[in-house]
Length: 140
Image (cartoon, rainbow, N blue to C red; front, side, top):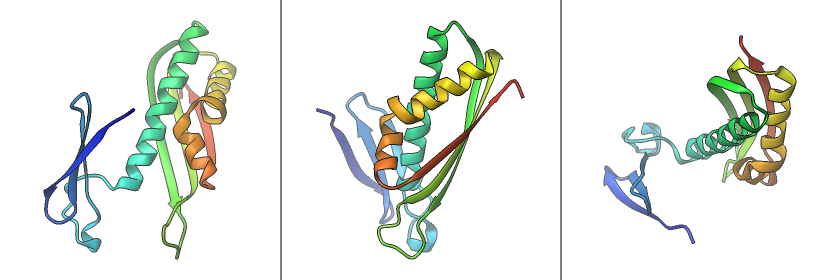
């Protein structure tokens, strides 16, 4: 079982979450909703989690294929549903940017495997109705 502890730290809506290993993340709502920019918005944390999950998958897959990943970054763009409560992620686009001695076909396959098979966060979003798309760039 995973345990996360959360406590209010700043203003009305500034919270800190701590995992069992002592890792922390600060969260808050927007100033328009009464927050004070103490931390990231919880829905953005979900996209960050997907990014981290898929990045780990992709690097693992490429290492098994003896590809050398010198750098890895990604850009995640998301659009939430309009006029709904709760407002879920409707469309999310990811741009994976890799550099190194990497075959483009292998990079594209690794990204596809992560996004469609291995990344639990991506699957969680998909089951919530999110349209996930991505693009892979190697040595650009």
